[in-house]
Length: 84
Image (tube, rainbow, N blue to C red; front, side):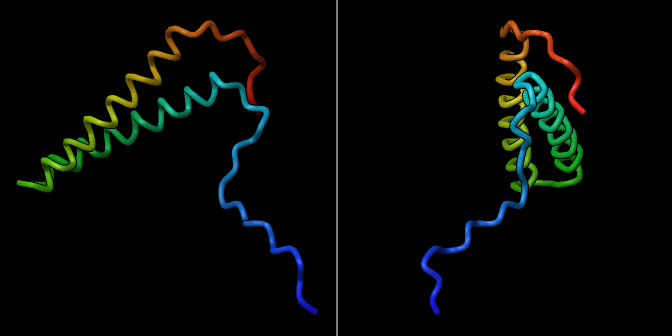
């Protein structure tokens, strides 16, 4: 017998729905900062076009950091209990 409804797609990663937006932005900021450090370190191990491409990607990472930091610094987040 054929199945009428398909299986729902599996989820590899999922964020808990009850996480405060400020917490999510802080995590994004820390992730971008780590990525910035890694790409900068790697860029200085490369030469030529590969180095230039990696430094261009690093600049995009910094722009992402600036956007997240602007929201964190300008939005009046309410206090919330610590996340588990």
